[in-house]
Image (cartoon, rainbow, N blue to C red; front, side, top):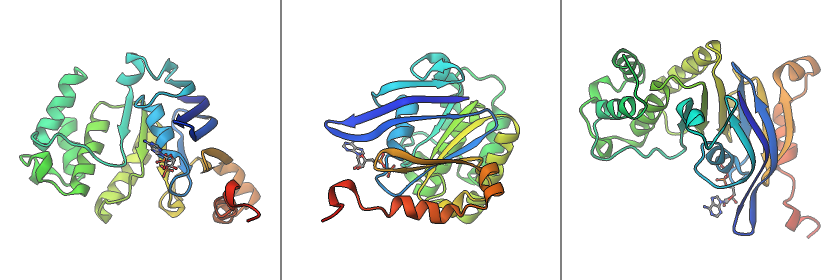
Length: 239
Ligand code: ADP
C-alpha cells in the first residue's frame, strides 16, 4: 500500500508538485499520466526518498524515509544508472548482498532470462545499450521481491519483447498483491492494465479515475486527458 498525503515539492520557488494526495492499494496498478514537465518524475523521486518534500508518504504503512519502507520498495528510474564496472550478474549479487537476500540466484536467473540479458551476464554496465541498462534496473528492483514498485516511464527505450515481458511481469506482481505506480506520458502504453489513473498537469492531479468507474460511465479517457493537458498554462491564459 502506498499513501501520499499533501505532497508538495518546490525547486527553489518553482512548485513542481502541488499538494498531491492519493493512495494505491495492494494489488493495484496506478498510473501517473501527464505531459512532459507535469511533475510525474518529481513525485516518484519524492516517494522513492530521493528528494526532500513537504507532506507525508507511507510505503506499506511505514514512512518512506524509514529502513522498513526502503526494504520493500522497488524503484526503476527514468534514466538508468547502472554501475559502470559491475557486470550484469554482479549487479544481482550486489543487490542481494545489500538487501541480505537468501536464495536469490534462481530468481536472478529467471529475471535476466526473461529480459534477455542472460547472454550479457558478463558484460559491464558501461558496455550495455540504454535499453539493456534499463533492463538491469528492472532486474535489480524486482530481485528484492518488493511490495511496492515505482516505474518511471518504463516502456521508453525498451524493445518490443521486453515491453511484452514487462507487461506480463506487471500483471504477475499485481496478482501477488504488489502495489504498483507507473508514470507515463503515453496513455496507450498502459491501457490494458491500469486500475487507477491520476492525470497530472502543472504539478497538480487534475483528475483521478478508477477503471470500474470509466467502464461503467463510458467516459473517454483520451478526451479527458487532452482536455486537461491542452489547457493553456495559467501564465499564458488570456494572452
Ligand atoms: P515529468 O516527469 O512529468 O516530465 P518532472 O517531474 O521531471 O516532470 O518536472 C516537473 C517540473 O519540474 C518541470 O517544469 C521541470 O523543468 C522541473 N524540474 C524537474 N527537476 C528539476 C530540478 N532538479 N531543478 C529545477 N526544476 C526541475
